[in-house]
Length: 327
Image 1 (cartoon, rainbow, N blue to C red):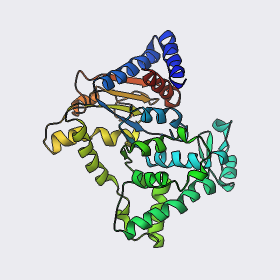
Image 2: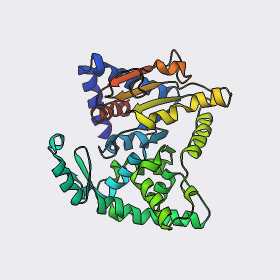
Image 3: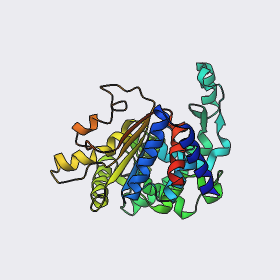
Image 4: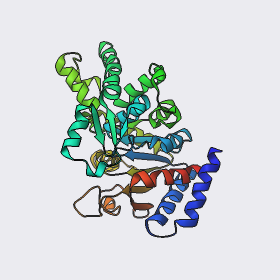
């Protein structure tokens, strides 16, 4: 039944998406499917507030059906899928979010809400509840003189079953839970500027955490990414599917020139590239740069399939993922 639903979306896209950005959605989807047929792996990046936009509804299936093999995301996307999993019923949606006054924003703040566009995340039910839980895992790791990547702490919490009774959505709609069950790596550059990153540093200052290296940050993550990329390009290649712009995409795509130009080792370029972004195409902007610009940086080859979909990712991504899942 699920497969039929995805097939209906694929058929709809073939029927109606014939030109411009719409046609590129179809072509990018077909290119993604072709990469998988060739035996290549796919790397996805998540910028913006995709978890609060509940992208997990489609992304979780992509992970479950082995259409995604690694992820790079902001710390916000990592934590906000977890927040949504345990606190969704306490979230507040603002229908007139484009016209909120400063006074209305202050009222939301005093009520304990943190607004992300049209959605308000509850401070106590989401952020503070997870803080109390994850702090135990940070302290346990420190006591054992261990250190982990941010996503590994999330996996420990989810796979322990400790918060299962707190779920407020269908767990099938959590992309992070799906990723934990598949044990795929998640790279989170700039974890420090996320809510839990802030909370970790605050607990260090308070003395609850003594070692800042308990949570591995940027350099360790890049080192892990090099190993992952080299391992997964031994026999095949890896494609790059970028949702939005920013550090979530800029961080991982650099691994190829790092290996070739800085380590001076042979490496395969990314075999596929697609970016979905509403950033205006421009020069001097990484998020708005055209894919061809990446050729000069040694990231893409001249004949690598390249797609730029200029649209709202919250609209486009579920369609593209449905197309891929139907194939």
